[in-house]
Image (tube, rainbow, N blue to C red; front, top):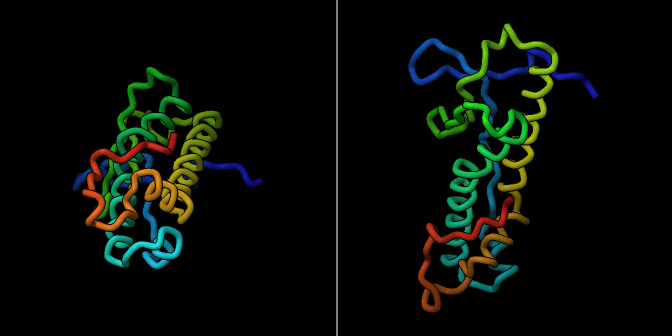
Length: 161
């Protein structure tokens, strides 16, 4: 396996300024076909489409509000003083503020960032997988037809720890 180097560290501009901060590309181009939800849960297509939307929103909320901080704590210590936030038109970049300038990183800091970025990408891949989406849909009961259930995305169960 090739080592992670400073050249591998992606950056993203902070807001409209010139400061570039270490970042991880968290864009997902996965399309979850509602027909798969229909096949598994035997619901209507409209219910399946709403269930996929609810699961997507639930996973995004869980990722930005819980998972990112957990990964920061794991890789940088509980009292790291770092801030993670999303940037880009579609929140497709996870940006970390509070780290030293990348040019000053030693091999240990570069390797730590590489492990953090890999863990974040793996988490995004999992959250966007059909398996995770179907699990979240099933546990939350979102595949029940609208007559039998009122959708409540804010109460989604956090299955992804």
